[in-house]
Image 1 (cartoon, rainbow, N blue to C red):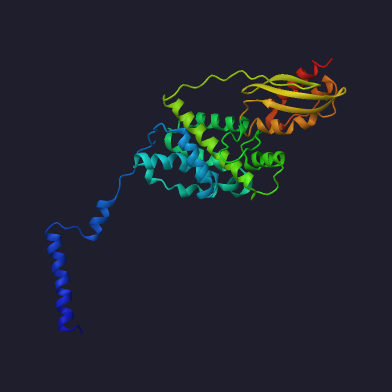
Image 2: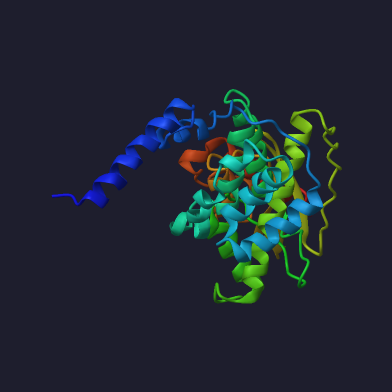
Length: 312
């Protein structure tokens, strides 16, 4: 049973609620409805950013935000949120924290996962594939890391978009055994900054803020007993350098290609070793192709034959 004091308190509370409603004062439910924010329209608008600021932010974010995927996404979308607010501040960058270490299994490099998220947010669905493909092809062929603010590092070309391939090749070449090594961390932070910069450049070109730079014609160096050969792949020229030991092939390196990652790149990764110790055009012609990358495999074979034909 309520005491008289308790009855008066509860009655006053009910009366106050009635007065508030009568005066147009919002109840809790109404306040919640008023605070709802309209869903942003898709795609979000692209604003050209200072790429040096993006690189610095991404590099630092690799260390403070949990790896490459979130670092790239935050380096671009997080900066847009700081500079422009809504709707960029509606997307939590934490959603990309799980992209580190190639999504834990060494698959797609997390920096590309974060980049794909950026492109998916800023480009219409019928335009995103071409830009993403250009990014993936660039990543496979780029000699990274370019961005090295803290220490001087060696650079490597991954010929792949996968973390295990890209990082594994770099660690082997650099003589780095542990992923905890500061050099390894600086390398991945630098690659993240490189990817974020490239995304900004691609978006600037796509939306007319910049004009695509014409590619410089590359010249490839040859040492003693080395020869350059060219074949035609799915997406243009495939260039190799063949090193001879006497009359036998000692090594084959793929120096340039524009093949689609995951389609042509298995041949780029696996074919070179097949030519070691061969010495004739017929032997090269008889090398088995990679079944999933037949066109690229044949382009590499043609390039090796072109180089071998130059041997005196």
